[in-house]
Image (cartoon, rainbow, N blue to C red; front, side, top):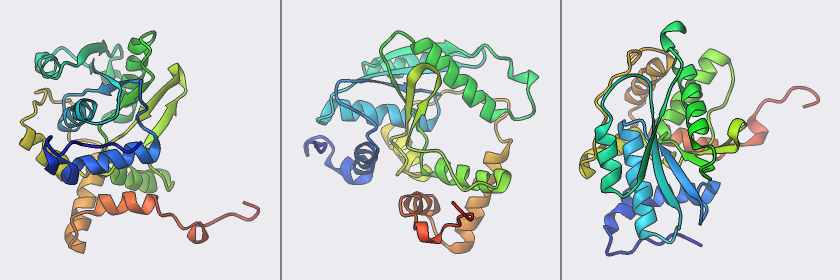
Length: 249
């Protein structure tokens, strides 16, 4: 059943961002009626925008699902802003603790940190009946990951909108894959959403920041503003006859 947003409820939202989120949900079966969704609420713009969007869909669309949020603490800092945000939306809020000292790992251990956070969430959600965790990755993250894989792994690929997590039987879903970073930032400002004022000690380092800067330079040189959206479109329009195959493949 297609999702319907009542015109009385901010009709402009449909054209602005909801139609793209709904398209992702329907195309990749990201949300099913009757299930519980947990947002991975880091406290950054992406995750707070995603929390609001899913709350909006739960409130005003035909989608019938439960919604909660969880933050994985990596250090000692104040998270009351996230707790208040979820309380205002009547969303259950919980926290998990990262029990790994990242200082014992190599410089800028972003991929390891992400994996440890997923593990902490899976452990904390065990027994709750929650099977799906929603991440706030957007089209910019898709393009950056694709570039990183090409440059560092010699592999043509990126993350998918929906992926099964082997441990714990969880499913990661990414409803914002059709939205790009600038749009998410405009949404965050327009909606007056909060942000957690904690800066990761590894912020500004690593391959992702280099990929982000490279894409920005590419957009400037090509005089285009939607490179990441073009990448997402290309991933959905792969021509098998133009891909290389090894003999016997």
